[in-house]
Every structure is written in C-alpha cells, then in structure tokens.
Length: 104
Image (cartoon, rainbow, N blue to C red; front, top):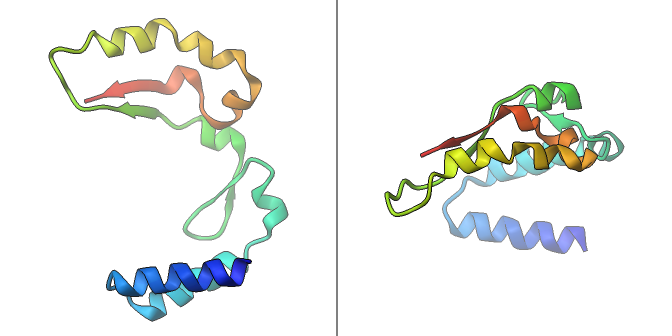
C-alpha cells in the first residue's frame, strides 16, 4: 500500500514539475526515520534531530486569518477563551494555550 501511494505521489509531484532527485531524496530521508520516535509526540527538524514536546509547546502559535472589518473582534474572543484549550491534556502536548495569538 505504501509503495503504491509513494509511486502515485511521486508521479503527482513530477507532473507538477518537481525534480526527481529532490523527490527521491525526500522519500529516502522520510524512510530512514524511526517511526517509533515519531509517535511519541516529537517533531523532526530539518537536521533530523527530534524536538521534545516541551520545545514544541514553547513556540508561539499564531491563528492566522484574513482581516475583515465585518467580523467580530476575533483576537478578543481567542484571548478570553484560551483556557478552554487547557482542558484537554493532549492539546497541551501540541500547543501551549498561553502562546496562542491572532494574526491578520
């Protein structure tokens, strides 16, 4: 199943004009990663090192939306109800609710 999906996606990327060597290198990099480490809530950096959940949640988390003067004050609502993100422990493993902000 994986090999069929890989071939299909490779063909899709080639049709979009991507370089075959770039595609092959990306798949080689992905296939060399330890899947067990990836399922532990870590993230792979460009240098193949793993980031801990603490490092991930220390980042700012922007909620990017198009500015529309007809919308209610989204930033105010997000700030007011950030605490709801803290109610589920799995959410806190991915983002730090205190680091969420709105960006237009």
